[in-house]
Image (cartoon, rainbow, N blue to C red):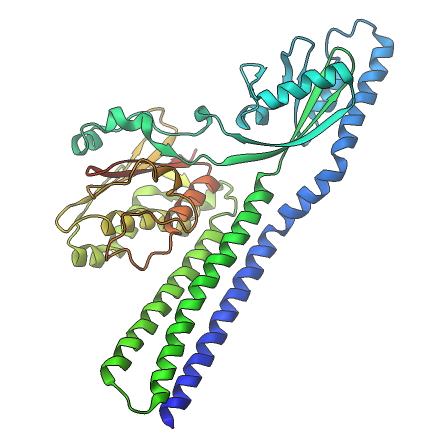
Amino acid sequence: MPFSVSSVLIFAVFGLLAAAVLAALLYTVADWLHPVIARFARSDSGFGDRLADIRRRFGHRQDEDDEGDDLDDSTAALISMLDTVSIVVDGNDEVVRANPGAYTLGVVSDDVIVDERVLEQVRAVRIKGGRQQFELTTDTPERFIRVMAEAPGNVREQHRDLAAEMRDMQGVSRPNWVKVTVGRINEHFVVVLLDDMSESIRFAQLRDSFIVNVSEQLLAPTQDLERLADTLEAGDLDIGQVQHEARQVKTSSRRLNHMVSDLLLLIKAQEPVTPTQSNRLNVSEQVNQVIDQLAKESRQLRVPLIVDCDRKLNINAEGEQIRAAVRKLVENAMLYSSAGSAVSISAQASRAGDQVVIRVIDRGEGIAKAEQPRVFERFYRGANQNERTGEGIGLGLAIVKHVALTHHGSVAVWSAPGQGSTFTLTLPLAH
């Protein structure tokens, strides 16, 4: 029967294509992150050796200098050369040496250890000696998350309360997973070594969410194809039912294609970007390219796009990634806006003059406060979905987040139910 043969062929070809795409993506992710995993695997074995080296070096100097009230130069130099974040604490619990990472990881602030668990172990090791190892989860302090403190005039006109609400803006803040080793150098000093394991943990999370969500997305089109094949094989065809099921297959295929494209963008957006003369881009040109691409969609949705960009601003960036990030923000703003309301896109220099601030403002229904900290998570979709956003898979804002981070910038959201949303992408200006 011709319908039976064609349906089987369609099913087989689509199944093979999906399997090939999944295998290729898994291979790409694994290959890309293999050096990260290897680096953290190697770091585990040498962690105690580093502490022993410091103790031996310091002990040797103490034989020559009995005072022991100050950290000698050779030991300080040895600690400074470690590739691990280190903290040296004296007998009064004051930090006498610390790498910058100790502050950004949220363990040290104002020359004091602020994490109670670390401080507790420092005191215990000072008294009893030995070595303590444990794992810790910290949050990066707010001051290290670059979020603009106030909005420009054109934003205040559209959201009169926005300037006051900026303190509630949700930025990209990722938890830090840290392996901590605490050891006593002598009766005067204790050293704390921090091994940041965040990337390996995030890889595991990415792998798990990738497998679960991709499996679900692959299952939908195969089920739709199976239903269509059963209908075609039944013989007594209902043209209306066949057309309905064919549309389901088309929708599922489009959704799968969307997911694959976003996953590839997400992978590319996690590769570090090094500023060079060859990747110097004009921000206004990148934004205008996106607006031109979305002109047709803007007319269809009846959501005008209003652009206000400083044409003199340049950044060092990968153009495809920047355009993808801006496009995701503008598409989201249009999809969550009602017909007739406008979306504003601006790009201006920060007050300090060292960054470009790209804002996308909509007048949609807004995002609930409880959901705002999660909007940048992979595959997260909020409760305020509508008929326009049904095919989304929750990767758009995750892509924006990773584009910001790999370009040494940040992204944040301000939103209030009934007042709309403002997404702010901040990137360093080219020098």
